[in-house]
Length: 616
Image (cartoon, rainbow, N blue to C red):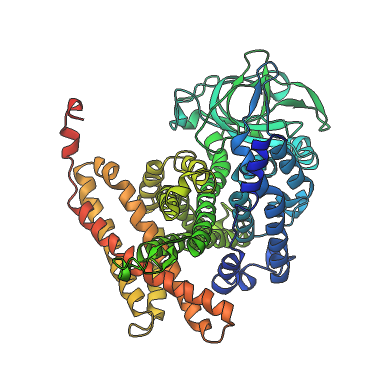
């Protein structure tokens, strides 16, 4: 091993700092999934003890097997064999992917009939946080079981028999293939063509770009779910269909056949997540790229949203996981780094130097990171608990789960859009805690920033999430789902004594909720003037909504912490005190910003549209 690589291994070995204590606090003390989910319906084989031991075991696995590959995955470049269209991964990364699959960890998310554990989403996303925090690149390469699950849900019986079993037993990879070079986020502008040939087989022709893990050498086969436009289909997203297109042809009995005509023809050189192969895939250029129409129905964009929504949740959870470990690393540094005297003795040259955690500004930065990291985890796991309930009501799309489905759909832009955007800002604060040391590779924060930035861009940029929230999740149903969510917040506020220990938090959340309601009351008038107002104010609406919801979830945690603090052990007492400190800090320093946001939206104009381009 080269000395430079040895140094990387040493500095990377202990980069990941998990927070299983807070995960368990969310699952069992606040959400109480042991009462609402575990032991019921499709989760009948799971109990609290099983979940705790599983996540404890997986945390240990992530620390030992995945975290040590994190820095290596940044330093050792990918290699593309253009003749075979195969991407070669760093050896340690490929080994970690195979080990994770061989030990069966991704099966946690699959139903029992596919050999899985049928764990509820709240547990699945808790495990995903551990994967993404230790090495998000590995998390992306574990997409094969998710693709198999989608085929199992949407495919025909023959498609399930042909693909699902070999994908899971032989650890094949998988990818979602939407974006095209000229279309970008405008998926409906895609020009990749599909032509039906004999025996229900289709041939795909076109070029796709920015395909995450579109090829890699750690799996013998990769199954792509591809959006393409059949001959004669209309324009836009409604003209798209979804196809199963494997790298190597899969015979009816699940055995591998010849090389299929989909090749990786380029890999992007990126600022972060470098070992995640972001590929250009070319279909049908060398020889036919054959595939199958999923479920034999032309319903591509609706079908692909099963994958997209999973990916959006994953992106938000990845951002949250990165902020959490960044904060805990910064906290550790602040406790041991000695620099400068206490501010009150700044002019005393003989004053002893103190640890930087004793400086007010460092404490401000640390508590900001803590409040948001724990608030975003609360948001992610609350959303996951809604998904638990959806499955218990019959699953996505069933008549019994309609209201919960809509609530989940409303929360997804908050998880993906808000967390991915806000975390980038907060990671800069983590780096600032270190001073100049944070800018160097001696500490993980500089890579955290580079690896996380992509989160606000892919699976729909932040503003796309904002437009999705406003138009598809709020306006489309007349605000009824938003009112359900606000009703939950109001119910929590009704539980809090307005003169008790959480009075400050109650007042701040009440004011912020009123201002958020004012924002939504303002927008109809703005819309009568022009839809452009949503273009200008959409991100502010997204952020204000997310910050109120996070404030509510932190208050719920504060209620639990206040009740348990006095009778807790010394260690747990500190934990609960930290919860109370976080919600108090958030109430005083974040929620008042919603009032300003309301004023900015109310006063918003369209005059920027009249500024000539030459003036920019």
